[in-house]
Image 1 (cartoon, one colour):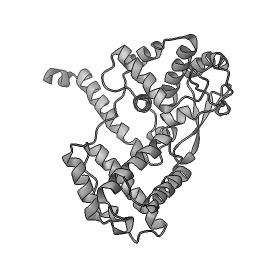
Image 2 (cartoon, helix red, strand yellow):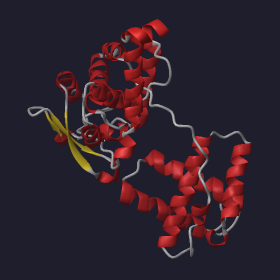
Image 3 (cartoon, one colour):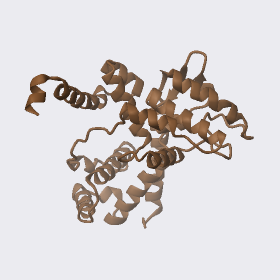
Image 4 (cartoon, helix red, strand yellow):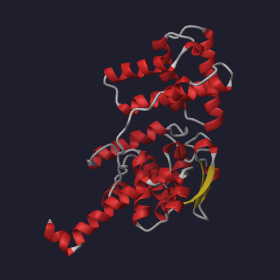
Length: 298
């Protein structure tokens, strides 16, 4: 456990600043708090006395325990952000985490579904009338517009323009963007809305649970996981998988990378550029299937 009321106050102030600046979810808040609790319990020092050696020792201990590099990297990012906040507040003179390098993580191409898998997924929603209509609308909208799950569950009825086929989305840092909604997704949403009205509570949220409350991102993940098992889709099917699928299929269809960046709400084009690697893989496969010399060589 952490010692001292000061540490509790520092962490609370840090979480409050993230909530104000980046509009992080409750799950992200818990993850940050858990990382800091683990780190500060390990070093058993006040922030002013912590140096880069302490941080390296903490990361080395995690590595010896067999923790994945991605998880270690995330914890280091949390520590960096925490000390950046403390430096800004004048609590520490410098950020010791700046001197600690992140573990090298091999780049992996984003997982995405084939068009056939997408069609199969859209046909699978089941359950009572409300749940079937809601899940169909969720799946269609995630694939149609490439939303993050946090963006999907935060949508209110006032954000939806059925007539124009548009939605207003609040992304990271509360940045808003207006996105087009495909015809299939619009049809699914129109079919869902009469079922939504049957819920007694007057929540402004578009997507509700069976009690009439706003659906959580964890619930959406569970829904996709259930349908993934029903379809026997290889690998973990997450909301992010559908976001990757949207971007990849857009690129395959000839969409400009800048346009995809705007649709996804990426602040940097470099974040979007990972999809070019997917496209090159796709083009290589097409070449190997279609080019006569490539077929001979095979």
